Length: 464
Figure 1 (tube, helix red, strand yellow):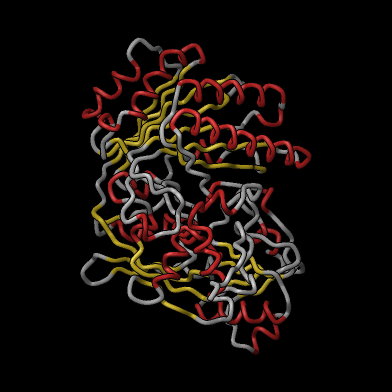
Figure 2 (figure 1 turned 90 degrees about the vertical axis):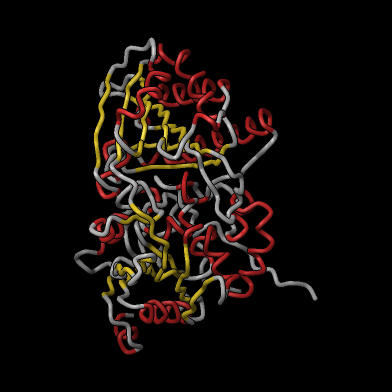
């Protein structure tokens, strides 16, 4: 393959199973998502991506696209196929007016934040430094500035996409606008995003991250306060970026609740917030860390998110509101699962509350258009491959129970957040009423389903 690709003009590296760094290049954030590809390519240019796609199609090799490698479903790996690893496409440039940043499709958020920091700027991106920009944005993109500026995909000006037939197109509001709509939430279903132009904003830092550990005996007190804060939008502000309620195990496997806050500004201005949540409680631990910019803030959750077992199954759900019954039910379900499965003690459930804002939700294919909503993340973590199926089932069943509870309590089901889900959810779960339109778009840009690793969309042409 390498020789044929070179003759076709491919300029990047190509690995196979005999290459010294093949095993390292095959690793992913979750070992569940790893597969043994036949080849791994590292394109240096959009033209390289085009060459690799055309070759793979002729050779009948299935394609997977890898940016940061965080998606736990296996969408970024493929057995006996070709992986297009975008890690060489990591250029970042600022326009003269400093209002737009152009980034390569293989960038990580730390690349972008570090580049913008010297100009006192930021963009609407993710909260964890080593998440890939391309996958995060094309999956929607929640982050520290979502409550003020919308989701990451809401702030895309244009994208350069390599299609299934090798063509390289620019998508914006004025050219190929249907393609732009599709990749803003449709992930890699329509092509490989090799370049993005994003809006910039002033970095509103400094930032504060506070983490408070509470015992299970505090739950009857903290749950009503958390519910009130979540459901009363007047209590939220742009400065209280995120409030997390986490179910985790402590250093001796004891069940704990972590109450985490990501805040914008000096910690002193949030004394009223902390009094509201903590009055009458005796935390087991309480740490506050100050961060000057998004670069440092993007490392705040390293210990919680990046340490632990290699095998992870996840689900993410947009939720309208929460209820005490929902939290209590999930707490008991988490306790039962982790108590009965010693290999799963690192499993987490995270309520992520923020005053999410959607800017022009009609301009993306995301299912969730609620102007105010929150997120629930479920992460089943373990070490042994024999427990993969159990973890996948538990995560899926938990997500379904939450969706049923949302309908019962609030009369709304916002589906699932594809960027955090395994492939046992359906494409209709991800995109809802937008799915038929996505099917027509698939028929236009990828009728033979060259890109089919991420919640595949079945092409359907319009009837005349």
